[in-house]
Image (cartoon, rainbow, N blue to C red; front, side):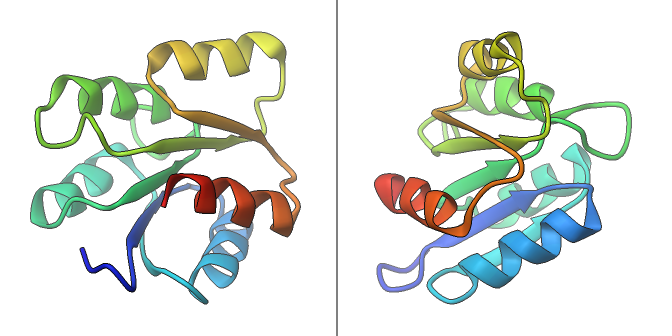
Amino acid sequence: MTADHPTILIAEDDAQSLLYFSMVLRQEYRVETARSVDRALSLMKKQPPDLILLDLSLEGKRDGLDLVRLMRKHREWKQIPVIAATAHALKQDRDNCLKAGCDAYLAKPIPMKKLVDTVHAFL
């Protein structure tokens, strides 16, 4: 983690969303990507990110909510801000994200300004 280039971990299984988020955020941040909970955990063990942009649907048996629940139990990761960025757009989906430990919730499609403003609010 560096003060001038915080690291964002984008945990996303959709190639188009991953490309969009990466292109928008690479202008100001160091970006790491993971398509599964296992890959995200591997990256976090090497270097905890400053923020996680998290889709609910990920490759493998575990989903984004599983990842955030694990994070909130881990001493080193529980304070990392997590922004849910998902196509699951019902009120109950939002409530489930916040209850699991996400700090913010964005429903796809996410306008660039809203994405950047939300990330800026936490970094």
